[in-house]
Length: 264
Image (cartoon, rainbow, N blue to C red):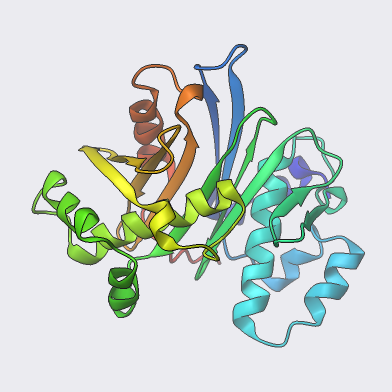
């Protein structure tokens, strides 16, 4: 189904469960275009309108709801990030490389994907760039696991963010920034976590900008919502002066407030 027809066929889902956020980085010449899509979990009946026959067959083999949900979220978010209005969604192929990194087959854009619970997101970006995204629920039960990969220096950064940032939200900011940079490097968490150490964090009313100790050429932008954190890592060189804060404002104003979206 063509993207415009998909929006017309499912108007409630499109208006309440899909967020398309175009971005442009002014630090490159010409400016680099990006397209961020965020999607709520669609019903299974919707899947046949954006999955190819091969993808439908693959999807049918998953037994567990968690895996089925992540498949739908990842595929739809990636296809909407890559699509133009007249593109056939089922014809957009998002495959995986040797390290499970997403590959937009036959496209001029690259893509990075994330999902958590009932929300998924994807960023389609210019071939000249490097980029990674991550979305995670703020989960008290994951606090100990996040602490284990947090250095003493990183723990001290919380003082820069103010007393109104809950400890678990702060740890989730660090976690998502590290997950996003691991996607830029295409390693995942298969290398020493010290490699991803966050050096600094700077906060304004829209979110948090971070830098990395071992990768000064990259910058993270993180937005905290009611129950989740969304982070994006981009090349600092691609950003005009202060542009990371413009991106924060845009994401703060456009991202859904919470991760649990119910569309009848």
